[in-house]
Amino acid sequence: MSIKSSDPKVSKIIQAEERRQQEELELIPSENITSAEVREASGSVFNDKYAEGKPHARYYGGQEFVDQIEDLAVERLLKIFKLSPAKWHANVQPYSGSPANIAVYLAFLEFGDKVLGMKLDQGGHITHGLSINFSGRAYNFSSYGVNPKTEILDYNEILKIAKREKPKMIVCGATAYSRIIDFKKFSQIAKSINALLFADISHIAGLIVGGVHPSPFPYADVVMTTTHKTLRGPRGGVIITRKEYADRVDRAVFPGSQGGPHIHQIAAKAVCFGEALDPEFKTYAKQIVKNAKALAKQLQKNGFRIVTGGTDDHLMLVDLRDHKITGKEAQILLEKAGIIVNKSLVPNDTEKPFIGSGIRLGTPAVTTRGMKEKEMVIIADLISDSIKNQNTAKVRRQVLKLTKKFPRE
Image 1 (cartoon, one colour):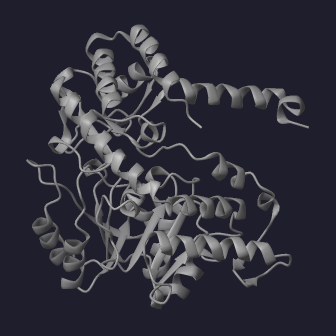
Image 2 (tube, rainbow, N blue to C red; image 1 turned 120 degrees about the vertical axis):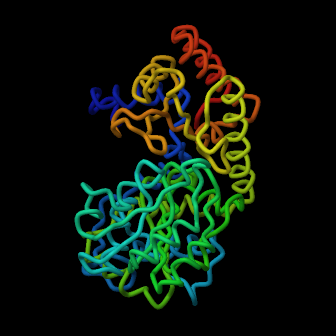
């Protein structure tokens, strides 16, 4: 029996969401479109299985195939990052990015330890030390940001802060930063004060796998990434660490911060990593960046200020202060036009986080749909028309016309 007949109310809502995703342009940089195979694995019978513990050391019986799928996911994960199993260890059990970050902190820190992370309004994530988040409440975070003029990371200033604060760990990685992150420089800073280096590459993992962004390996002591976003897999997290830290990371995940892992999710991760091994994935990653650059360039031509003056990765921040509209207002307006973005703070913003003075745009999902630079120019013009002229009904019709040419899987 299908859900359509057994539970028509739920089925109707799912169908409505499928239609929404097909008919709208998804420009939130943390979202993407998974393959039918990833979704098939995610909905498999592995959903029904408890598997507390590590592969081949479980607390429950009936784990033969659970162990096989988790071993395969680990093997493929190390392979996509070109890492030797003799030197690196991977844990694919974290439910998502935030729980994975919690596990990293639990593995390497004691409550109250000093940590250095990126400010939220400068591009950092809430788990990088926001005062109302677990990270900011459990640990003594200090922050670094971007140069006020260039809006780019100032490594000399980060070094000064690190030497002054002397943190036990430095967190590098961002959720709203559009330029290349120099992991080697971060490593040099960390080594200069004998600190651990933790790289959160959730947004750029797919770009690293695709060879269009430098890798944090071998500079970082521990690396975390989500498996969606540019990696184009299921919603989940993974941790990769140097071999000598394997046991402490595994214990921090289970029983330190989680119970039984979601094996259906791990199966979907294995499929995702297999797809990332395909040579086509590199082509896809390169196109993400090409599309982001084309989108940013056309928006600039249309009179919009792009934070840092452009982008090197999959996303950009658009500063809307000159257009007398807040990020929240722009997000609502664009959604009426069928263009999905998210409001965002810009560096040194005076607005509250729920309002923001900008919007954050990304190209992973539209690239998955097959769109290229030509379509990015069209999308930039549609965004401009929506914000400047508020022609949402007209733009909505044009969005529908465009999305019909590029159906999502």
